[in-house]
Image 1 (cartoon, rainbow, N blue to C red):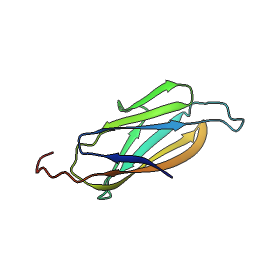
Image 2 (cartoon, one colour):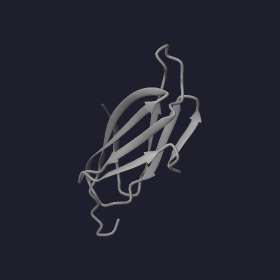
Image 3 (cartoon, rainbow, N blue to C red):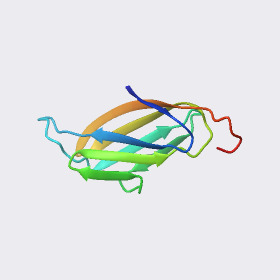
Image 4 (tube, one colour):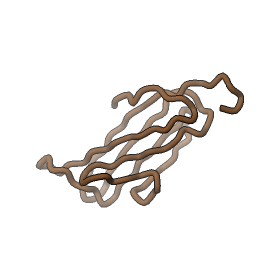
Length: 103
């Protein structure tokens, strides 16, 4: 698990997941889910069919989303491929508290 850094409410977050087969060759999974857990433990799931998920090249998948909720603290992101390629990874990042009532 690694840190993606610190973000403010309103920032765009981009997470990249790389998938390879057992030989190390970049390979696309046929079933992929990104899960985002907010600091308050609310979870949001994104699949490869979600508009926030992109596949810019073989084996490379990205999740891009904007932090729109005022939920400061540590957030987690998990990428998980369950078919074609089976692999998972988790990362985390911090969201700073805003001094504004409606950031």
